[in-house]
Image (cartoon, rainbow, N blue to C red; front, side, top):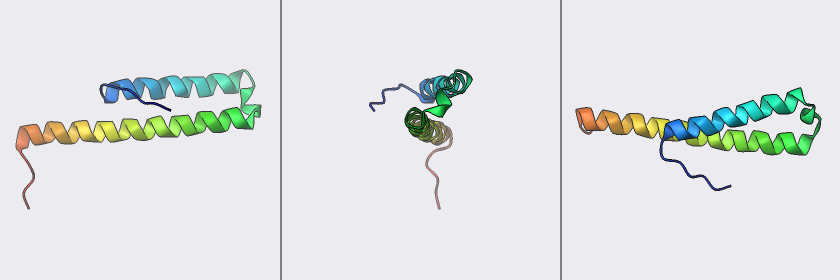
Length: 72
């Protein structure tokens, strides 16, 4: 899986799409396909982790720009 994004908001969009795909899969009965659901869960977990990491990085960067590097 290749991830390309420009910011945490882009990653959040991808996570939201995957969550909708998961709901739709359940609605149409694809949740009975363990291979498909396992792949979807793995992809969702990967993108969620990337989103959280990007968000934390953006927050830390913004904070450092405002207040400087933490001392101590």
